[in-house]
Image 1 (tube, rainbow, N blue to C red):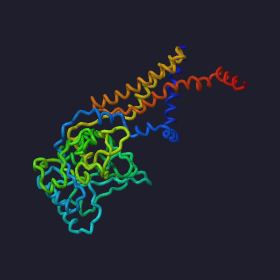
Image 2: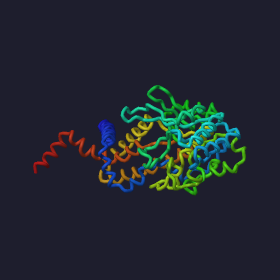
Image 3: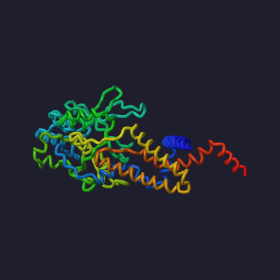
Image 4: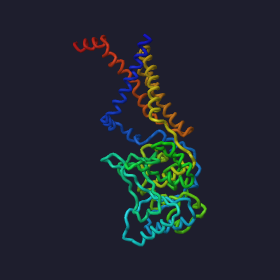
Length: 415
């Protein structure tokens, strides 16, 4: 009897795992999403978003990074802004904007080229391009060579699920490095910027060896309530630069990022290069993106300089946790099925509900206390299937494999 019980537990666990693999592999199951309007609101949310949006303690503003809004300025205007800022000896200037081709305004192009050539430490963004035909990263988009000859390149790609610009762009993570098909390793824009202030920290960050890193967000610039923590970085608008409405000390020795922050600072209507982040004040059914790309890069720089990383489980660890808890569930549920069959549905559903609440609590708790993102999707899936799945195993699979079960089934079917 004891031996048979453990055999059933092991076989039941294998059956649930097989069921999980089958459901996970059949994309047609997504058809059921149309019956789940609540799921539509939750599909772009992770439980750790609740931590960033609602529970994160107010971080200290980072004075190492200054953002400069280029707004809708012409190339001549941007050139004058760069000249104004660079005279105050920043550690590095990063330009998060592409200047693809010479324009008819030749004077403006020449002014911009001249201004960029005088910057002592200059980084200009690139974009590593994915080729859908080869399914590989095979090329790099850069600004026109006139503007880049004095600059170090660094890619500005951020990880989102968006296919086109108009799609929702949720950004939780980024790649520290990317390698193209010619075996060239490219460094992320924010990592390159951080290396000018703390090269050893930037290298230690890369040495973590993670293909993808979760961004530990600190805050936003002026956003009029779009996120919980605005004003965590110095931000200068076009008028501030032209009117010298700032003190040189905020520039000297700092990372300065020239980027688009709206037509004016605080602009919530312009969605160009704007993303949803976990800091969004509305974390379910989001309506408006909350952070410009340049500010996301600033958050990554802060994370590296403060060594405030987010840790997470490796895939094998996620699977191991899910299998272990599933095995324990099957063991407990099997005992209930055999000893308390009339109570099976009620008791197992209560246990599953408690497990769901406990898992979500652990995910938020570990994020808050240990800066660890527990992606327990496999575990939640396993818990969800364990009760009813085990009932199917005992009621259908096991009976169909026994002589008595088949005999009873055929007897009923002949009636």
